[in-house]
Length: 151
Image 1 (spheres, helix red, strand yellow):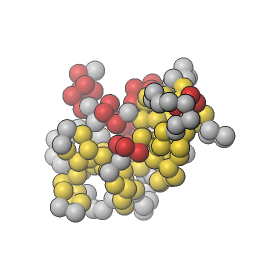
Image 2 (cartoon, helix red, strand yellow; image 1 turned 180 degrees about the horizontal axis):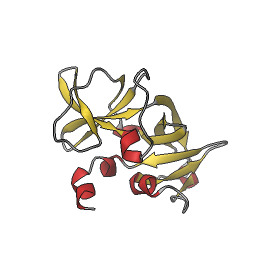
Image 3 (tube, rainbow, N blue to C red; image 1 turned 120 degrees about the horizontal axis):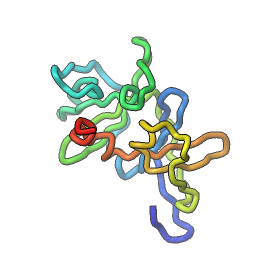
Image 4 (spheres, rainbow, N blue to C red; image 1 turned 180 degrees about the vertical axis):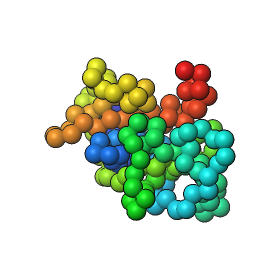
């Protein structure tokens, strides 16, 4: 998060449960409503399935599952944030999309000591907003299935 004075960092924000999360805008390729998912047998527990998005096969990651936030109801509209890692396309299933926020890098803080350990493992740090805490997710850590299997 090193930038010169006066510059800001842009984050795409979204909610999972009632918690506000964000990722750097540079990491986001798409924001879309999740369509019908095709299950993937014997896949990691966080993999909700795959879908075809404009000719690309996208592996959908259930962020609620990964963060230990329980399941959503069957009639909820599910949004997704499209990201890419290692040449593969992924969709992070979220509850709702927020705004793009421009934040001062100087306001970025390390994870609070009382942050849930599962959240801390995938968080780069936080921004304290007026009435909320914005947790900045580390996409690489969320998508590092091999590392989690070894733990």
